[in-house]
Length: 353
Image (tube, rainbow, N blue to C red):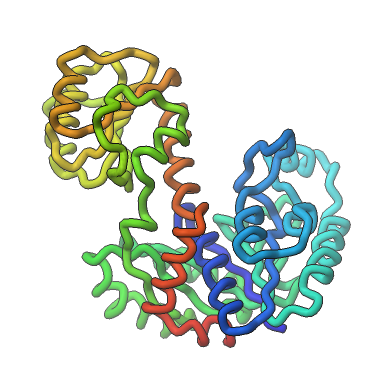
């Protein structure tokens, strides 16, 4: 049996989608696949229980016959951490719980997939960093990373120090076209010379890097004020309209597939966003409805206007969460990721070592 632990350098790297997609690809090869996320960190309240959505997705799409308490033995919530630093968590017992569940889940499998944390050092308060877990469960480690600037290699070198010989390599995901040459020609050879193997890179894909306006509307509980406008447009990034109208216009002209979050009383920002061309929706905060003129212009330009009751900070947090989670939580997204992985990388090199 081969055990792989997938960790990442930052949030939004596609770790969950890649882990589950690789599991499906392994199943298509005839392998029996198991999955576990030892520390639940992407927490939501589901039917009265706090748990991680990632194992729920894996259980469904990999058709696993296992309970959530097995797939996610440790719920690493803020409350749990508070209790840990007060000395009310036993690291040895937690390791035993993880090891016992791992033993049950891995029985009879050809490949065991472990999903780590957004940051490999998460869990240090109870001696359960991703490096600790990899050592305890004898797992090889693959780091999922983006690449936006040359200094990103620092995080990967830090991962090499943390995981040592257990680091099998790095898989780059969501790489923009303007960074691809630098990554392949400079960063990958640099890392290889320092003992960090690169499996390759998956290019930015609009379907994976975005959610539809309709999905965003539902995800943040917004009211659609422009029902005649299609919500099929896709949102990849957020812009905050809190600056002067002249400054906003300069920023908005460079936008692409963006959602602009601004106060419902800022008609100047609203108008600038509608006219920008690369803004696919405007989210108005504080429950303030825009003027009829703004709604009329938005309808004629085909830009959906969404209204929420929450303040700007809360709205940003909710919207960022929808953008981050919505990219991974559908069968269609996982299928698309599996296709991209197959086209971009050697699946055999990843799964077989």
